Amino acid sequence: MSQYIWLSLVAGFLLIPVSWFSLQENTPSFLSPGPMVLVIPLFLEIPRYIIVLIPTVLFWLWSFHLLKGEIQTPFRSLVLCILLIVLSGIDLLYCWPYGVAYQGFHHTLWMCLLNVFFGLMLILMACIQSVKPSFGLNLAFHFWIFLWLGWCAFPYLGESP
Image (cartoon, rainbow, N blue to C red; front, side, top):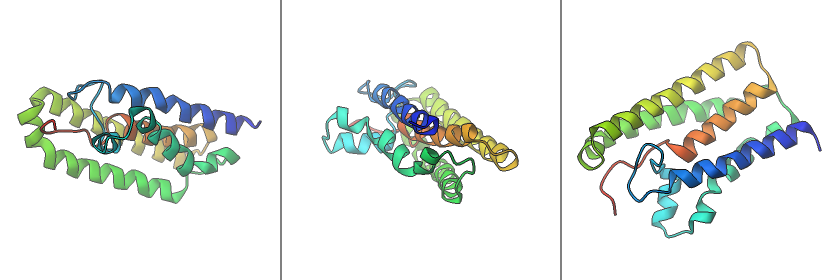
């Protein structure tokens, strides 16, 4: 089996424990913020052992080019990155009052800072990748996107159901 396939499979499997821990607590916390990509299926009463696979499956479906060892980041991934950063910012601005009211100021601030950190890291990786492309950075960029989605992107800020 090609090293590219092996590395892409391992990266996908590493997303499962992150997703599992992001849903462990009933109320949002720093380690378990409840990202919307996982919380919405949870509200639909889909079993957790299936929900935690969502970021992994999305990673493999979106990043199929990594299986061939491509070093260039696809344009669609850059668009996805920008879209997620913009939508995350809008979501955090909109949910700020609810987060402060229900989860507290410190939790809401930490979620905002964490999301800004993820966004900045993605921008930095994309800039470096555009100057000096490599398979490793391409893999890291895509892993980082789905790590963000599976852990803290669009955190649940508001009243618990």
